[in-house]
Image (cartoon, rainbow, N blue to C red; front, side, top):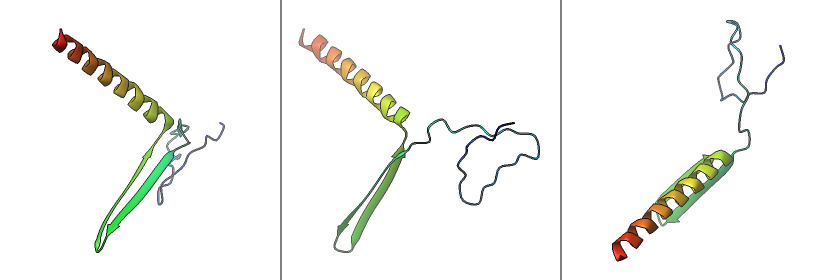
Length: 78
């Protein structure tokens, strides 16, 4: 059987002793972002990650919401 690529988290190892096959990673490319905001002694930071499929889904969802809002506004004006 051909070895399939897989990325493992720290401390995790695949268990192939029971005949379980590893699934290939469907989106190995990941978009990551991080920021930190500091004012005096206050610090706020955040990080995010997503896949290209997630970005496409967010775009489709945004388009559907804007279409619905425009229909409601048009109906209210009539």
